[in-house]
Structure formats: structure tokens, C-alpha cells
Length: 384
Image 1 (cartoon, rainbow, N blue to C red):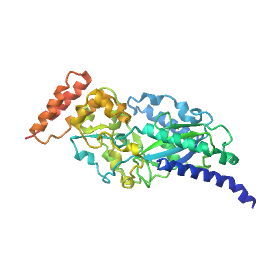
Image 2 (image 1 turned 30 degrees about the horizontal axis):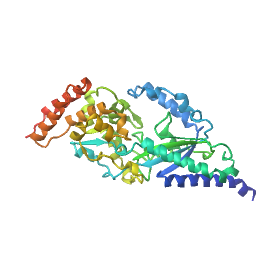
Image 3 (image 1 turned 30 degrees about the vertical axis):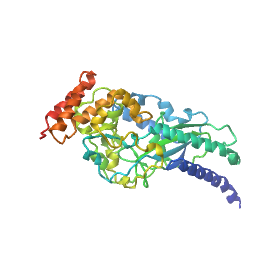
Image 4 (image 1 turned 90 degrees about the vertical axis):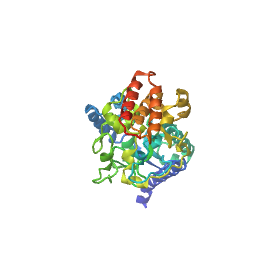
């Protein structure tokens, strides 16, 4: 009987975690896990980040050199926080053909990464995490006997790719999946087409003796490494960010190196190739969250249509969208490269593209460089 009584608090805390997990799912999250803010992974990951930075693989992502103290000590990021609730939210609107990069079959279409075709996920994930926090706060009176901090002022703060936090390692250690060779999180039942988020809370809910990472199920597969158009995955679990198409089309400012332009193909914002080819994404799920539905036809839009956007149209069509991050000028830069890689069906179509490119010459020196490159590529085509 004594042993049973000793076990009861732990069982009750497990029920609290189960209640939170159920509430998270009601709010559109596919799953959630719990991790202590004092987990040893933070110090380990900080050292690994420094080693990666020392290799010069971060491109111009200079912010990664900052806030190492907060990354290593997340309890300092949110005062009084004890537990991180890690969540994932599926974002696919339609299921891709398994192990096939169908984006390459539409060379005259503008390819936008699937997570970016609807509302900005940062807003959606944080908004739903805030709702989860309020639901937890409302439940606190029922948990005050559990010695988890429910009798103290409740502190919370939601994040989604919005602070110096090791999101993917947290989700890995919290049991949401394992880190694939492409450095993204993979879930055995749902692949990798999901966004991550974190809710820091002042309740003490983390499980004891948590493993440092979820067991990998990649085996000897190297599909993601082999498919990468620019060879950015230079080794299993090691990404050269400066070569990654997602980095080049979103984060990189100024001119894009000639050596990457053909490989970029028709991708104007991000790249899904390493996920599309992953065998685990045959289990990818359709999102239950309306915010991820494509807006303004961004899942099926012609390159020339994007190219002809005015800045006012860009601002209208990307309101509340992740595409705002790259900016109008750089989206045009990306689209110019994609037009240089397009495949006009006949001479008339070719001339239409050439005329459209030529009409923007003189607007911006950096953009001109990419337009002239695109024109040169198109002149080399043999089109009847």
C-alpha cells in the first residue's frame, strides 16, 4: 500500500500531461512532449553549434553567433519557467506523391515551399500555443495538490522559430521524432512536413530520466543527401547553410553565386526536395488547421505572374505570409533566376519571357545582374 501511495503523484502528473496533450490536439497540434529547461542537451547543443559556426557553414546568418548563453540556459529566457512543451503542427494542404520531386515537372511554375503557401506559421503556432497556455491556466485550481507549481503565479511564453531556442533538438528529446540526415525532424507516423513550436511554462511537468534523443530510423538511407540540388547536405546531419536553396532564396541578401543558379531551378522561396524524397513522408498528414490552406494561388502560380507583380501587389498577396521575409526585390531576384531556368514551349512563349525580363532592366543593379543571366540562359535554348 505504501508503494502505491508513493506512485500516485507521478500517476497524477502523467494525467496532467495527458490532459495537456489532448488539449493541444484540439487546438490543431499533431502532438506535444515535455522537457525540463535544465535538460543537458542545451549545453551539448551549444557546443555543437559553436563547432558548426567555426566551420563557416552558416553563410550570413550572423545572429547564430549571438545569445549562446540563452541557448545553453533556456531558463534565463523566461524567468520562472520550468518546463518546455514542445509541439508540432502538420502543414500540408495536399499529399505529395511519395519519393518524387514533382516540382521539377512544372518548370514554368513558381515553386514556393509548402509551409509558406498559407498564413505565416509563426503567427499560427504562437497563437494556438497562447490558447493552450490559457487553457492550462484555467485548469490550475484542479492541480494545486500535485506540487508542480500550480499554486504559484502562472508564467508562460510561446515561441515558434522566434527566439534563440534549439527547437529541433528539444522536439527530438521530448519524443516528437528524430533528427534526419537532412537536419529536420522526422516522425515515424507523420514524416517531416510540420512546424515546431515551444511553450515555456512555470509548471514542473517534465518526465524524469528522459532520453537525450529519439532513436533514429534513417538507417543507411541517403536519399535526402543525394537529392539536394546544391549538395548542401555535406554529411549526415551536417548542412552547409550557405549552399541551401532555402537559405539562398530567403535569407541571403544581394547577388546569388552563379554556381547555384541552375540548381535553384524554379524554386523562388524555399525548397522541399529533401523532404519530398524522404521515404518517411509517405506517412505525411494533411493539416487540420485552416491557416495552412494556400492563399492567392501560391500552390499553383506561373513564374511570369509573380514576375509581373508590382510592389503593391506583392504586399497585398503576401500580407500575413512568410514570403514577406525575403522582400519584394529579392523575390524578383529569385524569380529572375527561375525564369532563366524555365522551359518555354515554343518561340512565342520564349519571346514573351524575354520581353518580360527586359522590361525590368534598369530598376536595380543587383536585379539587373540576374535578369541578364536569365536572358543569356534563354538565348541558349533551342526553341522552335
